[in-house]
Length: 317
Image (cartoon, rainbow, N blue to C red; front, side, top):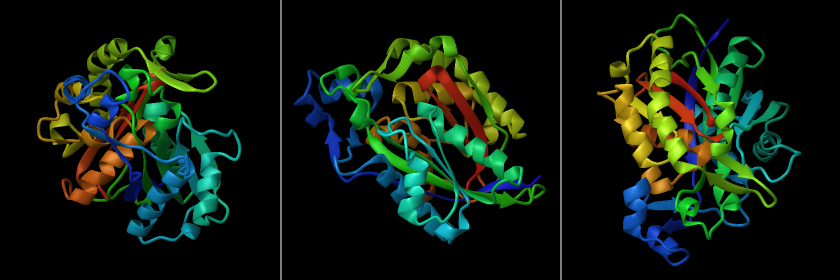
C-alpha cells in the first residue's frame, strides 16, 4: 500500500459580506449579542446565481493550480456537502464538468459538518489501496439556502464557501512527506436529531445546548486518540483546525485536547459556520497566511450533523 499526502489546498468565498449589523436589521439581535454567544463578526453569502458546485469548483481550481497539476491529473473527485439541491447529477460530477476532469470517479459525501474529514479519509484509503492516484477532496456548502432568516438562533451562525485539497500517493516510509494520518471517526445516531437539515423546503435547525455539551465533553478524548494514531502527542501539533461551528465550542475544545503549542484556527469569526467547507477553508487560510509551514503536523477534526465526528493528523503541504 502507498502512503498519501496533501499536495496543495485552496479555498473560495463569495464576495458579499453579511455583518452582524446587517442581521440586526432582519431579526431581533445585535452585534454584542452575536459576538458574546458565538464569536462571529461577519460571514459571506452566495448569490442566487452562485450554486454549490460553482463555489466548489473555484476552490478546487485554486488547489490544482497550487499543486501544479491539470484537471487531467485527477481520477477521483469527492465533494462533501449537505446543501445540494438536486439528487443527480451530484456535486462531484458537476465540479468535474466545470473543471474539465475527463473521467473521474465522482461521489458526494453527506456527513454535514464532518463531511470534509470523512471525505479526506475516504480519499486517503482509496489512494492507499491503489484505486486512485490523485483525488480532489472538496468541502462546499451554501448554508444560506437552508437557513430560516427569521430565526435569530440559527441565521446568525451560517455562511457560504468552499475549501479543497489535492490528495496523492506518497512513499509510505517518508517521514518528512506531508502525509495523512489514520482517521478516528464515529457517530452518535440516537442524538442525530440535535443537528438537522430537514423538511420541504429544507431548513437548518439544531439543539444548541446539547451540541455544545457533547462537543466540549465527549470529543476531546476522540481528538487525542486521532493524535495517538498518528504517533504524536497533542503538544506536538503545530495547528488545530476544528469544525468552525462556534467560537465558544472551538476554544474550550482546543484547550481540552491539550494542543498547548498549536495555532488554533478561528476563521469562524469572519466566515461563520460554513458546514463541510469550514475545515478546508480555515486550513487553506492558515497555509496562505504562512501561519503554518510545510511538514507541520495539523489536527483536522470535524463534528456536527448526525452527531458524527472524524479527525486525522495531516502534514501541512
